[in-house]
Amino acid sequence: MPVVGDLRVLLRLRDFRNLLAVRLLSQAADGVYQVALATYVVFSPEKQASPAAIASAMAVLLLPYSAIGPFAGVLLDRWPRRQVFLYGNLLRAFLACITGMLIVAQVPDWLFYASALSVTAVNRFVLAGLSASLPRVVGADQLVTANALSPTAGTLAATLGGGLAFLVRLLAAESNAVVVLLGAALYLCAALVSLRLDIRLLGPDLTPVHRQPTVTRDVLLTARGMVQGLRHLYERRDAARALTAMTLMRFCYGALTVTLLTLCRYAWSDSESDGLALLGVAVGVSGAGFFTAAVITPWGVGRLGTRGWIMLCAAIAAVLVPGLGLFFAPGPMLAAAFVLGTATQGAKIATDTVVQSRADDAFRGRIFSVYDVLFNVAFVGAAAAASLILPLDGKSVPLILGVAALYAVTAALLIRREPDSSGAMFHVKHRP
Image (cartoon, rainbow, N blue to C red; front, side, top):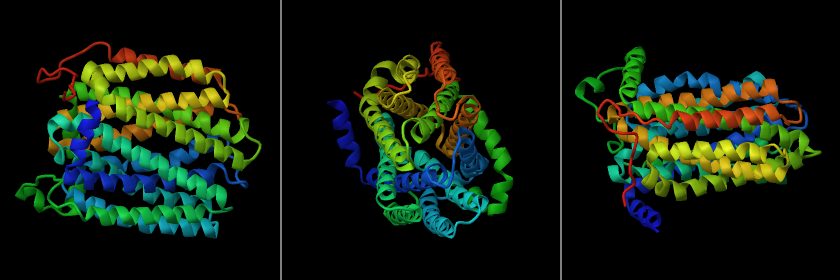
């Protein structure tokens, strides 16, 4: 199988393995931390979380640090990315410990959210830096396979971390603080592993002019830098179109995530522990979809190109979401979670490849930060929209049909092919 051979080649590259290890540990910690927050906000017995409350929690945790994204991008194009991984993960470990202490102390919700926000804010630098660094450790002809393995492996690590957090939470009562401290330990491990990467390896390649500015000057240059990054993206229409499609698919995924959370909490279980167990199964099934996407996407991109593959992923979701979701039963919804995990991750792998292959290295940090902001805004916007539609039990036919229609619109957006300014088509072939 060609994909297996390609993966073996990548895993022989020492720098790629080290960067992958940083990603796996960082995102496993993210999974642990996010599940700790979700269970504390949604599944704590003393909290009666409605769809609106779930959406509010997502907004508090995601929207404010979306404003950090542009700053993260400009600074990632000016700071050594290896140092971002080192100090970013050390800072997250410390802040996660603070969050654990706040949970034990049962402080007001606003203080808890402020602490959680500080951890997720630093996350913007780390994840955008990982994506921007990938082309520095693999060849141009290996990007599709590297994007199939690295971000997907990170997502699976986050899923496994979340599964571990679910297990700890189910085995020990009132264990949210313990789960958060487990995430802190994983962040610390990620910081230590990053030391195996050479400080100059991951870029960016700075000129003498870049080496002089202070942080204050970097922040003042953010607005101009973002304008330059957006102009760079606009000139590469294929990358801009891929990002648009991925943002729409992320919106759909967010709306269905809130639906699933609400169903697990109220419609499918009589207790918080049963609902939490069902949500854990759903996360595992979705993770299996991510793994499937990692296996089949290089093959699909090799035959359809990135545009065709994203279009196919959106079209499949448009058909199967109503076919499975309208039952509002655990079995079909779990099947839908697998389909959406496969389609969403498959489209993301292709989108990452388009952006990496079209954007110049000096702009990758900014563009991936814009990418990250779009991801979060779409997810929170979907959660807000879902909260206006969903009843307390999570069963809404209009929401399911609306999501299916939006998937269909996304597929239609990609039917017409346009060359970018250099004449290259929206098509990145996989190496045979």
